[in-house]
Image (tube, rainbow, N blue to C red):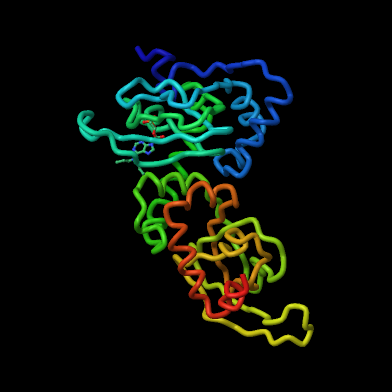
Length: 294
Ligand code: 1OR
């Protein structure tokens, strides 16, 4: 006979809501740490509250390893404050190579939980740090599905983006976690010259036109069109790099789809390619005057 147990869709032990009491100040700090992480942004309110309720605050001293390669996966961690180095020992022996740094707003420890695998790396604090730890059952029940869906959704596209070619597959997965797709119709202004900017964009589909008025203050100022951008191109980085207003107006030509990330995610995840981004920024014909002035 078929037992009710075996008919359940999930192989996990039944999810039971976990509750770790928190002050409103703690909840506020969690909200802050999750801010700008699209993995949490589009989650429904009940699940979001359940995730926050389940989290446990953890303080780590400089030099302490939160995760040791080969260990059992118990928690997923979100960094509120502090810095960590991640080391991988190939074949579990020999020298450990440093593969990544993680700072405020970053996260780690999801792989062992997602794949029921031993810890793939060692994570060591390089400063005193505050973490929010989410237990395995809650992570698997409320976040795993979204995480793997997003990683699959963006995997093929991110592989085709020239800017990201030098990255490891895992670094692209973390970028996927932070992306949100937005669709624009013909003529929609995606960013407007002179306005403040907080997002970075990768073009998934379509064409985006670029316009710039040389002297913004001058109403009669000449508005020039620059070469359009297409699939795999990026924009919106200048306002984030130099904390300047948007340097150009970008308009959707036909229907376009862009993958967007916040300033937080940009700073956190694009560090390994920031030199490429800066170098390319120096090549904008219409930006040179700006960077010369700086
Ligand atoms: P975990 O549960 O396996 C260690 O515990 C965590 O380190 C892991 O989840 C990831 O969150 C994080 N390979 C494996 N794990 C990594 C890596 C990594 N980087 C960060 N973690 N890399 C591949 C090295 C061949 C580094 C890619 C840049």
